[in-house]
Length: 419
Image 1 (cartoon, helix red, strand yellow):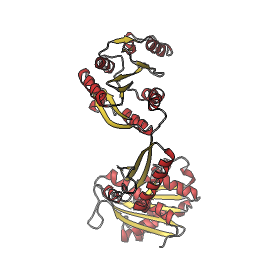
Image 2 (image 1 turned 120 degrees about the vertical axis):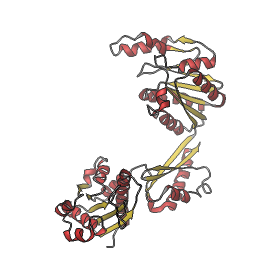
Image 3 (image 1 turned 60 degrees about the vertical axis):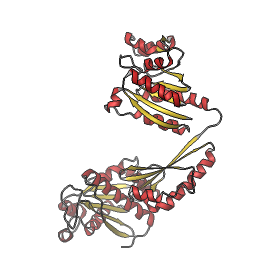
Image 4 (image 1 turned 45 degrees about the horizontal axis):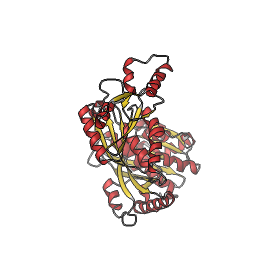
């Protein structure tokens, strides 16, 4: 079964409102094994709506339309549907009672203009809206089943679940198609390199559909499978996931769409480890990411933003000689920062960052994008210098924080560290 989605309204067409409805509908339909083939956005224009509905009806099986069911003159979706079928609008008494009841429950009288919402194309099946004033409706046009839903997101979502998906399941019958998805999150390789390593997947797994998504600063590999046998499909998806893991190795950090900060937190908590942070160029971003997870206080003991040399000396006990000889952006400095943070907090691990996020401050020896990371733990201290510049300060800081967490993740996974 294949479906098309239409979002109506000038606010959507012009970009004044973001169309979150279509994304939600597509996700829900795909989970039901219904392939979404097209998305449409169209303004409040009666002739254009009529033309689009006829076009979809001539080729489609299912269409879900949102918006244009309100009481005002620019709400034209219902009139367009009636014109396509060549029928008039008729008062649906039950719909009218539901609209009146909505206002009555709130101690108000229904305005006369809302009566328009109870006028449905003659022969259409009403779809009740238990939390709003706009009833939806269902009708067949040119052999395609159309579902018309309000554009208010929370109303649309409830009606999709209670009214549309139940009808689609009945249309589908006993044989159910399953849409299985696996998201594999990676860091450390550009999208082009990930794509090269994924190039051979269709030979061992011809039924798996591959998608790549750049979700800065990570790259996600998405595996999709449509199947009527859920058990066998999940086995196949697991084998494909193992294949991807072999190609990408240590660059994979999550199979559950968790952030890198969440995965690091899981590693720390699982082994009863704790962490202290000393941030310069990341400016508290590491602390922010880690504390976005409930329960992070179990493993994050301390976080300090030590941008100035004075604060590095006073708070972290970094040697003035080190700063004088090497400067703030140097591996020797971040090693002492990580050691100091770990010592101050009494943590298992200390993680430190210092770098040049830009747009100014770079030199030929240390250009914008230079990052030094230090990790101190029971097995010793390690450090790394990388150059990761995306030209924008905000992007550089995110990349810096990600690189620091990734080095910590690798340290936790690798075990003993050689100094």
